[in-house]
Image (cartoon, rainbow, N blue to C red; front, top):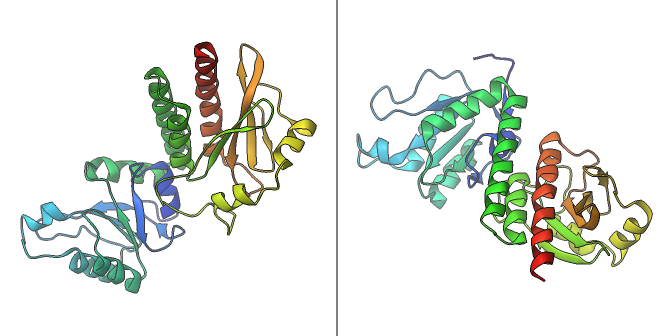
Length: 281
């Protein structure tokens, strides 16, 4: 483990943990130094140096001690110095209270999660964040391509993008009329760089502001992503003609590399979906 390398819980949620992981307690800015898996038999805790993410399977622990509770495990891990606990278990309010009191992050993993794979992904992210980010972006691209091949609707594609970035995604037609908008369904973390939710940002935008912006500065080049009243917007082209616009809602000034990749991959499949819709119509 390199003591100079770490990652935040927010980065883990975006690039390493299973997509449907949720943050039940703690803050996404919490820093993680390494990931370790808690074993069923003593010594249950691997060698800890402080700041780790502890991966816990309560089913496995109960195979050794049937009476042990999640709250007890969290308390013991907090005392050992971990910064976060990720668990395959329905999280009770008692467990949330214990984690909050201890000042650690508590994450709920999907039931089908593979702890060994998660440990590997988290530690790879800590060692090489850029490579892991690119890998997650390619996973999103594959999901989008698979959904498009299965003829899923536009909203299904937007949901993948919204879930990956934890930000709302909006599609307008070539005249600037909204066709679809999707908000993240999993409360994973707040939108970076803003105190307001993405929903508030969309709803508070003055009517006609986006259309006026399109009249002045609409992106025309394939792949171009421009700052817009909504956040960041790129063009959707069908047979070299503008069919619409795809926007990622974000009040920040800078688009992250990961979000840029998701928006670029999303634009490709959304354009294909619009072409299918026009052909059917």
